[in-house]
Length: 246
Length: 166
Ligand SMILES: C[S@@+](CC[C@H](N)C(=O)[O-])C[C@H]1O[C@@H](n2cnc3c(N)ncnc32)[C@H](O)[C@@H]1O
Image 1 (tube, chains in turn green, cyan):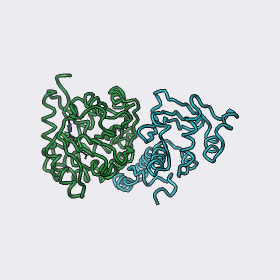
Image 2: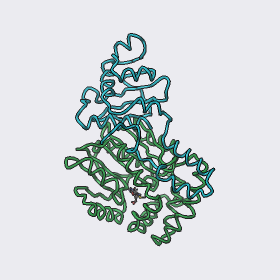
Image 3: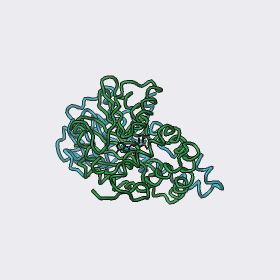
Image 4: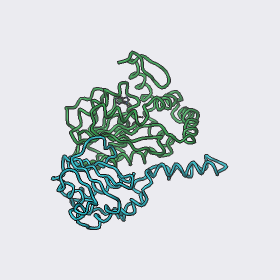
């Protein structure tokens, strides 16, 4: 692996990135859900709804949500798989998992398992899950190729990978608005609401450093998936990549 | 985006117990309309069907036809008769193709409507609308606020569903 990597727009030592990312999410954890609603005008809920619908998850399925944070996807997956299924909510960050646990209890959702894990080394056996999801998490992972290979490994043949992530819009107008919004408004709102302008500056920068739709599609196929397609949401501001292990 | 509607409808059918997928499990069927941009793989696996536009991998069965023939097929026209008339090209096992056609015939979505509205991507259309508003409105932020609800995907609102779930 390279000795340096990006942390937002900064170049940092590869070994340091994970700790820096942890710092961001330790800091934003308690205000994470509120900030998500405010910053996306509630749109993240629609993006996630679309992700769940695309999963084709059924009663009895086993689902792993990686970088699951406060558990929005896990809650919906739990409803879909029912008591005969299994949902694991995982994240590298204990503070985010703690918020997830609270969120699930507040929503009256029980029976979800919590695992603290790094997407680059997933502690599950080969061919375990029917569906693996990662929403707004992959761009924070240091070695994305390794993480994708791990996701492929733990999926059953025929299993489905869902990657919901910020991406690139090709509408010039939308791009102008979005650039202005994410570099000027988002960090300021982060400062006001979560008392942490710097973390929201990182979040905006990390979005720009994330691979575009086609690059991520190639990465998914390179990880071993037989099929991969993506759907642009909100004009490509967000994309859902869907890989199928053949 | 229409293939998302197809996928949702097919899996709804399977979930309702109205379709037996066992004979299709593990099979990939490539399905293409000659005159409309519907070119997809039906990946049948673990008792569900993924409908994907990724057609780079070779399929077990290849089905090619015109949209008018597809609609005739959905209205109950006999597959073997259409094959005999060379209106449909199938490479691979015809019985497997017939199983997919049987499933599609059971769908409770208005495929004719879906095909007539084949514009590629609902969201692209909505963004186009947004861009137009940017040009005409004095206050682009106001326009954006108004458009946000429609700009975002709400698949359950798709007009392509015919009384689905109601
Ligand atoms: C923006 S939040 C997304 C949370 C949730 N999935 C959602 O969509 O609301 C990103 C999450 O990725 C987690 N994360 C970052 N690097 C990770 C890694 N290497 N492995 C697992 N989780 C990671 C963070 O702790 C954080 O909770």
